[in-house]
Image (cartoon, rainbow, N blue to C red; front, side, top):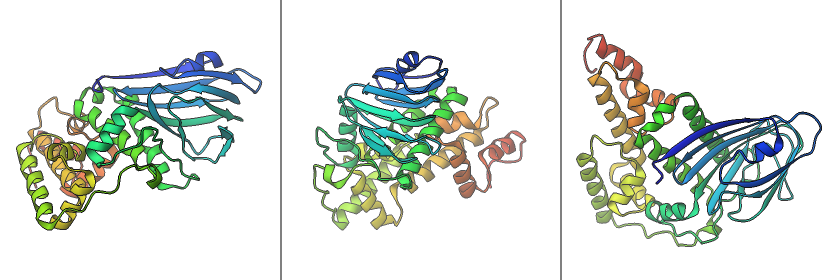
Length: 327
């Protein structure tokens, strides 16, 4: 099940060793430039999702198949050299999708650095139906932006790099199920963000009536109150209420003039604050944040300070110093 996870780093000195480093991908690499080979593959797998970063120093021709039955999307980093994917030249930072169960070719002409993700296609299709209210075609693939300036590409790069850094530098955080669940949902959202209208096989849902929107918000508030000490996210709320993300968005925006993301984030921030205010001797900010599904710690610190007027670490230190429990 997706709650299981592994994180590994392979430093390689041979092109064949490197080709075999990424689990479940069937690849063959041919070194094109002269000199000792040097590469690295960092991989994080959480159930249906696989995130990885691959770095090579030599010019390489790689071909093969991605992890079977998955939808994959890759984004070269800005430092990437000139490269060609399936006969098309890639610009620095331009994302490209890897067709499920179809052979691909990638030729790099120097140092190459790429981050990528793939998700089990069946899981993603089911997630899109339950959370987004979208029925994906059986051969659906994410679309790639035409260049490296698309904001979605930058957000995807930042998300993947931050996630891998967290797994590398703070691996204990992944022991918390809310953290893993939030990461899997973030990966699915990133892939679905590259959904083009031509690939959406279902019409947009009808906008609910005013009374229907009020009912959705009332049901959501009741669910939130019942689970006040749990790190609820938008996907969990959609599933609990059996509504799509768009219906939830319409309802919250029209009734409360707030997005459901904002409401849930405020609830989770307050839940984190309550946990920190308990201030046990073994409490630390990172573990508490992971329990509440916060995987991007710098962003959390900024949002927490905006809401609470202090950093999470300051809350914890103040409580331990006996200076009170709240402003």
